[in-house]
Length: 210
Image 1 (cartoon, rainbow, N blue to C red):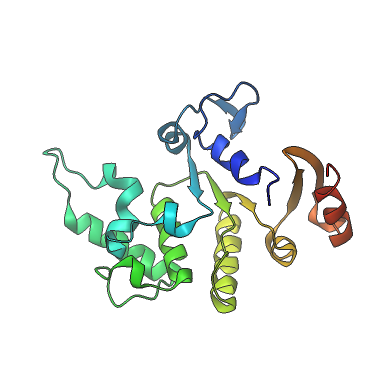
Image 2: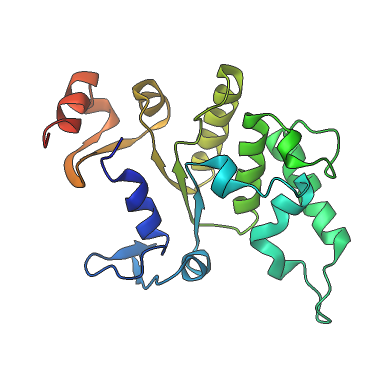
């Protein structure tokens, strides 16, 4: 906590356009990102740390939440939302991600934390991202739901999707990572493959600037 991990993801996603240095490359090409709109167009998606504040719109149903980030594909030329396309999109991700809900019309705030998180994942997968940014993706959800999220992350990575995950839980890092980067007070203090990583090495890197 306080190492600048969330700020790094938000910066990559274009939330801080005053960035003065550094580059973002996707598929080997440098991209200019001055806003989240630019980020989405470039193929980035961000699942935020605070699910309830930044991830869902609690007064909307599951279907509406899943469709939010890809509305451009659901609006017809006359400017009206094609509700069938929206409903079909929701059904697709409810089934693929195993979202437990009575229907796509159920208010998302009535779902468990794990199922809310799956709906947020569905929302961003609907934008067809090239790189998925996950900020503490299992915070505040139960053990069973965590296991399901881990399986989804590994499946998405195996399908070719690039994933950058922020986590403060070492078991989680060892469970799903290929490569680990450690930040301490905004500075990169360690970069290592998961096979060379140890709990002691990561902890020492995390406090090296303190």
